[in-house]
Image 1 (cartoon, protein in one colour):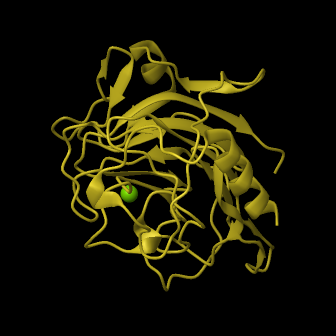
Image 2: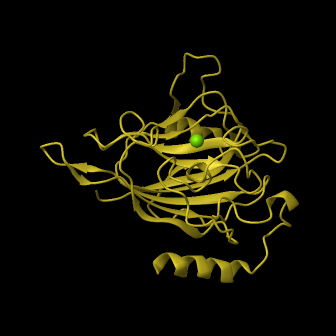
Length: 253
Ligand code: MG
């Protein structure tokens, strides 16, 4: 009921039509995942949130490191006119986090050709050192073939298909508001709490307290104990996805 209420609220707010006329090729639902009209959240960070990127190179450098700085191109991504362009290496937050709320705005460049998982792919990976739980970023407005529903935007990669599809066209800013509850493990190694995601995509709840059974690297992976405070990763998947406002709030546990 919570999910339906959120979907309906977003649909009412946004009206029946998309902000831009949809690509004719993008008519219809994708994999049976119903299209809905979303309204991205571009609100300012709430009081007390840590700003991880605010459009300035200084904020990028203050909060992020290149995971493989010695590789060619292994530097913090460039910032151009306030836009951070996903380039050449995965990035990690300098700080480690457990359970968090993370807000992130992203855009697929207008000129990108997306083909399935290629062309317009990134992601936000929680617990990337050991664990690896990814919320997928992908062009999912018109990119309708050669992929899979639990690999589309708003998916918990290979684990959970989004409840509906509020993806906007290329060239438009989109928002994710992710609540991630870190797993908890008992002293004997059993799982007390699975990694749990709520994902609000363009104002629409597409994952509602979804628990996952293991890493998103492999559908059959199971959970095993690991440190529950780790950096957060922004993925470089060979595609120049664009980012702007990113902020985070640490949660109690
Ligand atoms: Mg990805």
